[in-house]
Image (cartoon, rainbow, N blue to C red; front, side, top):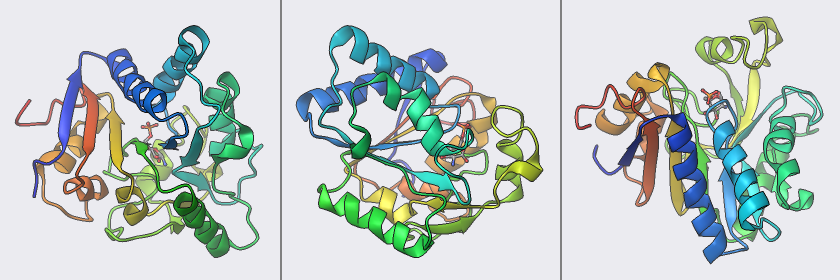
Length: 250
Ligand code: GLP
């Protein structure tokens, strides 16, 4: 099954961001009411800065766009400075003309996590599905918070984070101490993600090289959640040279 994923290798992280933002911009220009899927983490930050620039200087409008975010830490309020809602507000939403009520980030403090996850799935269906979902990748191959072992048909749900993900997210970029990182999260499932019409996964830096090689050229297996995108009809990985270093074919 390996081989279906298109890989674009850019010289550096800025090149990755420009390419990714260009793909978003083309979609939104051809379909102003597009439903887009978004991700958090360090990797997409430059892409969001580039989208904000396109909005400011090239009239790219998000006024009719609906967005869905991949995940949220369980137990954090949207106004907590490490919540993914806060990340999205500060990195993208406040810099473009997207309507706040059209931005959907899972509520990490919902009274009933199961109902919250079902409502999220229903909202995706109600807009006709996601046109293009942006993804990052964890060093262990996770996508959203679908850790190794997550089933290919998993839906949006409450999940536990692995020690390696807790460590990666408390290396000073986000949380300062592993003890501060929530142990659980709400995450779109792999099945939820696979239903998007187009997928675009970004990776930069040598820490992602092994995960990218496993996802693109390794077996189709829940041991590497990103490999479960191999049979998607339209999945592109946009990576820099360092993240591509483990690929045999590049
Ligand atoms: C987190 C997020 C993922 C993200 C990953 C990689 O665990 N839940 O969606 O892809 O981290 O993040 P980074 O881009 O910071 O390496």
